[in-house]
Length: 127
Image (tube, rainbow, N blue to C red; front, side, top):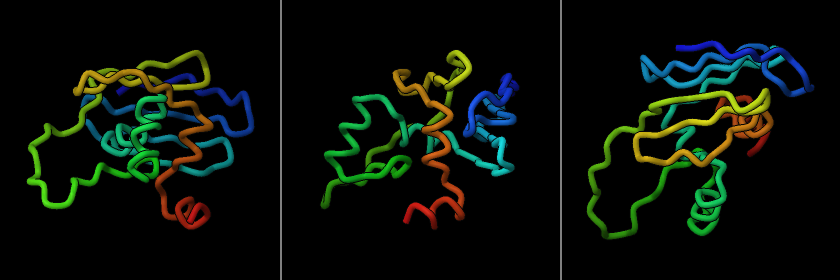
C-alpha cells in the first residue's frame, strides 16, 4: 500500500488516495467534497481509459468498468484474476497501473475516476 500526495488543487481532486497493491483490494479515494470511492482492480482494468480499450468497449457497447461478455454459444476461457502489479502517480493529476495482462497504457485522471465512481449514489446519478 502507498499513499499519494493528493493535496487538493482542483475542485474534483482527491483529499486522500490509498492504492492497496499488496493486499490486492484496489483503490480507495476520499474526495475533497467528502465523497468516498472504492474501486476494485478488476473494475479499474475493465474501465481502462486508453484509446485501445475505449474503442473495444465502444464496439462491444460496454460501459467503463463493465466486464467483457462472452459471445453467445462460446465456452468460458480461463483468465487469471486481474492484478495490478504496480501503480504510480502521473504528475498530480492521474494514476497509471501496470496490469498482470501486460497492459499499462491507461492514465486514470482524477476527473475520470470521479466520473466512473462505482458507488450506488453515483450509479443512480448516471443511470
